[in-house]
Structures are given as C-alpha cells and as structure tokens.
Image (cartoon, rainbow, N blue to C red; front, side, top):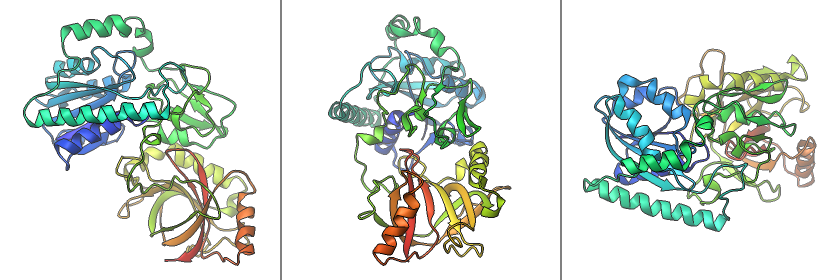
Length: 418
C-alpha cells in the first residue's frame, strides 16, 4: 500500500496520512511533485490517491500526472480521496473515471470536508474554533472509513451517476474554464520582498525570481501553497487581496513537532540543535556585496536538483532553509570582523545525502543557540549588543534560517558547542 497526494495548504496531506496510519503504519505517503513518485507507485498494488477539489473538478496537475503515466495504472487497486471546502458532487469520481480508463480498479471514493483554503476569497471562511471542529469531524470520518476498509467495506463517495450530475450542474459546468487548463492568473504585488520562498514550494515550479522579485508563469495548478505561505501576502489568484493565509498546521497543535518555526523573543529563545547537514550553493564574501543574493537565486532556480534530499518532518514538511556561515577554515567559527567568510545558501538534508554536481555539503556541528526573528537590517547588531551586555560569547558562526511553513526568517547565534 502507498499513498500519492497533491496538497497545497496541508488538508489533503493530513487526510491521506491519517488514513494510511489507520490502515498500514508502514505505508509511505508521497507528494505528487516528488521526482520519483511514479517509480515508487510501480511497486505497489494498492494506491490511495488524495487531492483537493477545484470547482467540482480535479486539479490540472492531478489530471496530467495520471495521463502522463497511463501504463502505470493497469490492474492497480485505487481508492480516490477528495478534500473540499463545501461541496464537490463527484470529486472522487473525476479521478476515478480517468484512472479506470487506463485500467485501474477503483475500489472506492472518499469525500472529506476540510476548512476552506482559498486564501483570497471571503466565502466559507471560519474562525479557528470552527476550523478545528471541521478537522476533528474529518478525523472521525477517516477513522470510521479505515475501520470499514479493514472489514472489506469501502466508501463510495462521488462514484455514482447522480454524484456526477450534481458535480456537473453544481459547479463544474459553470467554472469549466477555470479548471480546464493551468492558470496564468497568479498575481504578484509590489509587496513582494524577493525572499524566494514561493519558488521553493511551488509543486509546478511555476514561480521564479527575476530582478529580485517573484514572477509567475502560466502553469499554476491553483493549489494555493505559495499564497498561504508568502510572508508579505504578495500573491493572489482568484481574489485581489489575501483574506486569510490558511494552513492546516495552524489550527492543530502537533505533538513532538521538530520544526524550528517558533517565535523570536531574544530573552527566551534558546534551543539545542545537534549537528545537521545542509546542501546548498557556496560562495565567499569577496565575491561582491551582492554575492548572497546571487547564491539564493542560483539555489532557488535549481532547487529541484536537491528537493528529494531535503529532510522532512513527520508531516512531510521541509525542516528548514538555511543560510549557513563559516570562517575560511571551514571550522564554523564567526566571520572575520563579521564581514568576511563563507556562505552556503541551501536546505537541511538527510545526513547521508550526497551533494549533486554544482552543490556543496556542510555538516554543521551541534550547538546551543539563541535565535531571534529577523525583522530588519539591525537585527544582527542588536543581538550582538544583547550578547555583549549579558557577557555571552559567540561559540561559532551565525546562521540564517527560514521556516518553510511560515516564511519567517530567523538568525541563529551559537553560544555553546554541544
């Protein structure tokens, strides 16, 4: 058994992982954009296929994923799981019919109501309490469904003829132009700061950095991942302004969350981090005043080369984007005069990862850090003064950290080697 999913804001990802947990704790859930996703599916006879519903239709990326792998589906048993903000009619049936065309055996369909994730439209927005109740109800349905499957009873949501009529007349017929092809309507406002987070998280690689600003292509699959994560709220699609940046994880407290996406209060924010690996693009301060920006542009534009190496938490989220630093001896001591040294623009990876050609691997020693949210250009000097005032010495080079889930940037100041 294996799961494959497309998830922009975390809803579908949560649902498929929850269902797999109840059915087979060893089963893997693979994001659709993962380069070897199709290869991994080859080795399994039972596939759970999860995705969000757009106007009672499947996302174009899902449709293309199925069509581009026509020979993969023959004789595979597939359970289609569709997540939705309110109504889909035949959300599960849309993918089921296409999969069946290529020889798949559709064993069931499951519709799961989740909080609305269209960040730039007011309709269907709920309070945090309401969203939590929706998620709790979804979890109960998933657990009940899993119990039925273990007893050989599969759900049939969205698979009947009347479901198809409901989906067609309810939304799909009226909004067909929005879902027929990839969208070229993604808008980037002047609020964009050029942080590059959107270019790293887009499953379609539809966003790039041009002249220090994000630029959208013509292949948006409307997943809302970039819109929900943009720290400047600079991206919109259906609406003109961001109403709420919905992310599943913001409404559910995760146990044992090992992400470093925390608040930045200098006086309280101490943490210990064991040695970790970063693979990125390396440069040196003598390359020019804009060398760090050029490194990030290079890393962002070629992120697909290392995406499969990125270390992820239990929910499949990338743990961290690092701007790591070291002195010239590569012993991870502070930069000389705080202005001369090495910089690595990269992503935290599994320790046994090997850097592809053109990339560099650093293994950063374990330290106890003081970390603080990077709010302006004075953050570094303010923290250095704080350390001096409290007789705290730097034990190593300072690192930049960006939380992929929130887009917030932090600075990590090592104060003790572990």
